[in-house]
Every structure is written in structure tokens, then in C-alpha cells.
Amino acid sequence: MMVSMRAVRAAALALGVAFFPAVAHAESLRQALESAYRNNPTIMSALLSVKSTAEGIALAKSGKLPTIAGSISGGTSFDNLTGGEFSSSESWSAGISYSQTIFDNFKTDAEIEQARALTDLSKYSLANSEQNVLLAVVQAYYGVIQDTQLVQLRQENMAFYEAQVSSSDDRLRLGEGTKIDVSQAKARQAQAVASYQSAIASLQSSQASYARYVGHKPKSLSGDFNFGKLLPATIDAALGSALSNHPAILSAQASIRVAQSGSDAAKAAYGPTLRLVSAVNAIGNDGRDRSGISGSVNFSLSVPIYAGGALGASIRQANLGQIKSEVDALAAEDQIREAVITAWASLQNASAQITSAQAAVESGQLVVEGTIQERDVGQKTTLDVLNAQAELTTAREGLIQARAAKNIAAFALIAAAGKLNAGTLGLNVEIRSADGYISKVEDVWAELKALDE
Figure 1 (tube, rainbow, N blue to C red):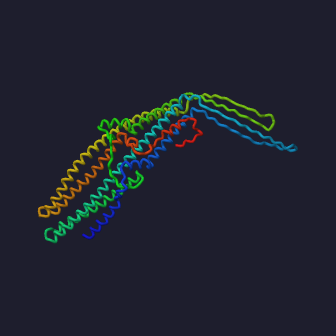
Figure 2 (figure 1 turned 60 degrees about the vertical axis):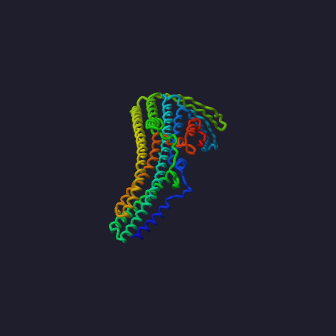
Figure 3 (figure 1 turned 180 degrees about the horizontal axis):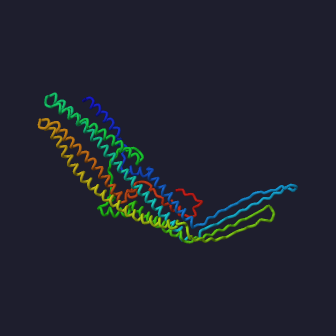
């Protein structure tokens, strides 16, 4: 049994070393966040979505602008009647047409405002995606640190229990111990090996999450981060910041604008529409004196009277959508308040858990050392030593987990306050924004221009 357990421990140690990267390639949390911001496809997808949505502004503006088209046509005709001569003629025509909606009861204006609100909504969705990705990086980063430390701790735990098995065997041979002591030590050793393997599995999962968000495998991670003035000083300050800056709140406000504009457009559909249609054509025909220019200018005015109930249904639907957007905004505020309070409470709790766990670790170390000494003089049993070590291990694991939880809770609070973004964190990256693209889209005469952004 001793040989088997030593072989297992040696294999476990070899496996563990494979998961601990070299210190020479250390990667700070800031570097991990920068790498994720540059490379994560979720952020890139959200940016492309903003640009795609912005095209709706140009589409809506086209409703107020003229449509101009040119045309040209030509051909040859011939005849060869019985008993007659063969004859042919060529003809051509070229023209240009112009059409424009002069007035549509401000329906297009409402649609333009709706398109702008949808673009703003998409921008806030990008900001929300950025927050979610950066928070996921933080969770993965500290998850790797936590699981790495747990693997190291459980390696030490395996070594301790192996020493207790050896000590129990020696005491049995000397007549100072029992087979029960040996059996109990071996059972705890087996548990330690299983716990170590579980820690390895958790570490592998954390490393996979890290690679997913950051774009590469974790290197030697430190966990240090200078928060500066990022953390809100009070819960009221956090709530105030969240209600002003959180992308979910801003998205809800943009959704209200979208719904209001949709309602305005639906109401405007009841009004008149005045259109101008004109055309100029040049006609030519192979010398038969039929060349010339023709043109036309026409106005049309239409007023809806009855549309089978579609107009009324559109207005009712738009009004319901507006009410729903306002209700959704209230729900979003409640969710953000909950997130702020939860993050604040988690941060305070983690700080308290760290203080408690540190005291438990210091006490547990003294207890283990004292229990071993008492066991050696016959005042304690091997089981007492094993139990003391188990309590110390639990305290040390609690301290590791509390430290990781505190750091994650700090970033969760920053995110809940709406400030977890590349700009606020001061990341050394080029900020991803579609503002320049949106400005170019707003250029209504961009039909033949190429947008290079």
C-alpha cells in the first residue's frame, strides 16, 4: 500500500507541475483585460452590430430625400414586305426621373428618430457586452489563481497524510500504535489524493474559461490590481453611479425613445402624403425628324380613409410597446439596484471571511503542531492529529476562496456601478467605438461613398 500511494503522489505532483506556468511569463490582470478587449469576439460582434444598426439611420433619412434615376434605351426595327423594299430604322431614348415625398405628416421624421434611438440602444448593448466580458475575465483570472493555490495546498496535504501513514506504521512496529491508527491514516491519505484530483479538474476548467475570454492560456498570475478611486466609497454612491451610467439603464431609456418614435410614426400614418414625380426624356429616330425632348411634372396627394383596421392596430400596438418599454425600464432599475446591493454585501462579507479565515489558519497551525507533540507522548491519538489537520486544511481553503471572492466582488461592484470598461480602467488599448462610423452614416449624400471604418 505504501509503494502504491507514493507512486500516486509522484504522478500527481508531476501532473500538477504541468499546470503551473513559468514565472518568467507572468501576466497581470491588467494585461489579461487588455488582451481580452483586443481579441474577444463577443466585443467585436457587438461593435459590428452597432454599425449595422446605424445603417438604419441612412435608410430612414432616404424617405425625405429625392430618388433620381437615369435610363437609356435603343434599338433597330426593320420590315421587308412582299413586293416591297427592305427598310430599317434605328431609335433611341434617354431620360432622367425625379421623385420625392414632399410631406408625409412627419412620419419619416419619427422613423429617423427611431433609427437613431435604435443605434443608441445598440451602442449601450456594446457597452454592456464589454462589461460582461471584462467581468468574466476577472472571474476566470481569480478562478485560475484560486484553483492553482488549492492544487498546491492539496499537494501539501497529500504529503502530510503520507507522513502520517509512515508514522503510524513505525509506531505499530514499535508497539506504540494500532492497526486502527494505520487504517485511519490511509483512509485520510486516499481522501487527500481524491481532493487533489478534484482540484486539478477545477483548475483545468478555470484555465479553459480563461483561454476562452482572454484568447490564450494563463501564464503565471499574480492577482494584484490597483483600484485607485474605482471602488465606490458608499453604497449610495454606487447606486447613484449605477442609475446614471449602467448600460442596462441607458439601454432601457433608449428603448423608451424607440417605442415613443414608433408610436409617433404610427399616428402620422393617418395623415396625408404629398409626392412629386417628374421626368425628362430625349428621343431620337434615324433622320425621320422625330427627335426631341419630352417631360412631365406630376403631384399626387393621398389621404388614408380606411385600411381594413391596419392603421388602428398599428397605433394600439405602438402604444402598448411604449408602455411596455417604460415598465421594462422600471424592472431594469430594480435589477441594477439588486446587483449593486448584492455586490456591496459580497465585498463586505468576503472581507470579514478573510479576517476570520486568517485567525482560523493561525490557530489551526498551532493546534496541529501541538496535537502531534501530544500524540508522540501518548496524550493524543492519530485520529486527533488527522482531525486537526483536516480543520486546518478547511481553514486554509476558506482563506484562499475568500481572497478570490473579495477581488471578484470588488469588480462586480464596479460593473454594477456601470464603470467596468476599458476607458475607466485605463487599459492600454484603442477604444472600440462606432461613433465615427455613425457620423459618416448620417451624411445623407453618402450613396456613392465608401465607408472605410
